[in-house]
Length: 143
Image 1 (cartoon, rainbow, N blue to C red):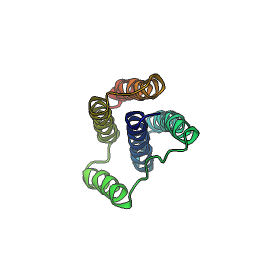
Image 2 (image 1 turned 180 degrees about the vertical axis):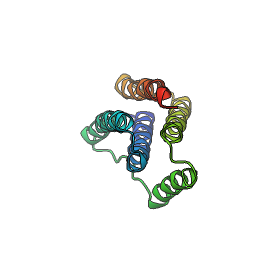
Image 3 (image 1 turned 90 degrees about the horizontal axis):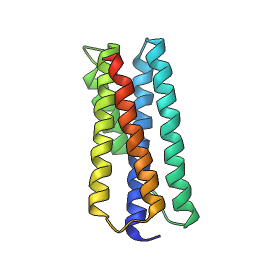
Image 4 (image 1 turned 30 degrees about the vertical axis):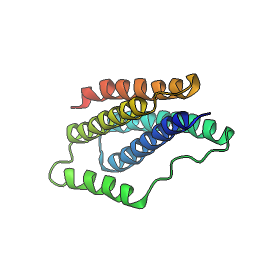
């Protein structure tokens, strides 16, 4: 595995980690059972994809993404600030959709900056991006 593969897999880990954490925070705020169930499904799938990237890096004995406390605080603070005056299901769905869009943008940046990747790394990245797109489509009904 080359360094570009490693960076793409780390980007998958990072974006999935941020999505899992964001969904966790949003889930605590929702009172809508259907939305809560959808978020639980999304969180589970993000974990599956994140684990694929982690397993691939571990098989090669390469270090993966290590989240920072500052990133976690910024994420949580941003969500809490955005929901101070409006904690409706529509607002919460909007926040998750915005986060998914950021995840897609982050993955495209990583792919464009690390173009010497292998098939396995790209398959995992594409799976992540396809899932992000489907997440956005599924959550639109809650807006």
